[in-house]
Amino acid sequence: MSTPPRGVARPPRAGRTWRARAGVAVPHLILIAYVVVACGPIALIVMNAFKSRQAIFEEPFAFPTPSTVDLGGFETVFTRARFELYFLNSFIVTVGTVVLVLLLGSMAAFALAEYRFAGITVVSLYLAVGIMIPIRLGTVGILDLMVRLNLVNSLAGLVLVYTAMGLPLAVFVLTAFFKQVPGDLKDAARIDGASEYRVYALALPLARPGLAAIGVYTMLPIWNDLWFPLILTPGEGVRTVTLGTQLFLGQFVSDWNAVLAVLTLAALPMLALFIIFSRQFVRGLTSGAIK
Image 1 (tube, rainbow, N blue to C red):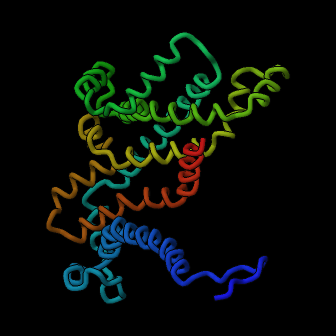
Image 2: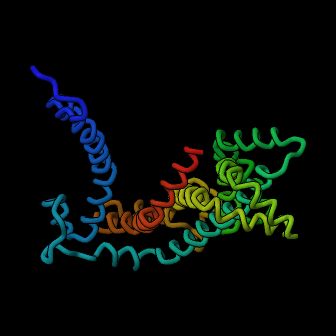
Image 3: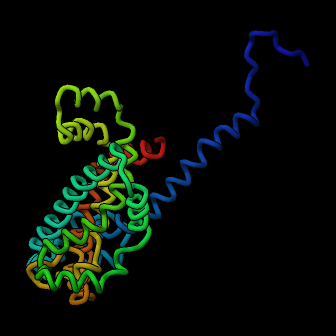
């Protein structure tokens, strides 16, 4: 068989073409299967929440139609429970915690990345231990502290606990981002007479991918947490969505329309926010991995 002259590209072999296509298709198929497994139950909950009880049992995988649409579950949720208050409480706790974690975490990370002082290694190890050890192990001590501070059944107590829970990871991740800020930018600001707070403000936008990643990573566990609301804020006026949903399910366990409706209401806000900020979240994770 004659070989093609030099300078002329050889035609790809069938085996190589098939392997190349398989190398591209297999990862996509695996990711699609994972999306179906992960998002399928959520889609079923949302679809059936808008259907009548008969349609739920007869056609659970069918989309709602004009003949099967039934909003009785949502009416039961808002008439038999104070879910608008639960949503407001969860919103206040989540937003307040994220703001404090990003503010305090970025300040501490800037200090660890910028200054050298005695004990910096001990501080770094302390933060690493805070990441590895779950805060729930100290529940008894936390409850005793909240009682002494008169913060039981208050949203401020939840915000403080969640802030302490999120700070170690925030400082650890953001320190890597602040170390990548060009030193010339900070030195030029100091030569121009800028204070350290001004230098921090100039460096903060350059760590925006890390801030977005930490914000999303902090937001989701707080919204879905049941442990600390059950222990620290069991009162009716300060219940969060997760705790309210759990108590509601215990009362209406046989009312499938109400059960699916409350699960939909509890999950949709975080799903929407994650979809909105998913690009920033992935960008922050990949930037941190590259750095």
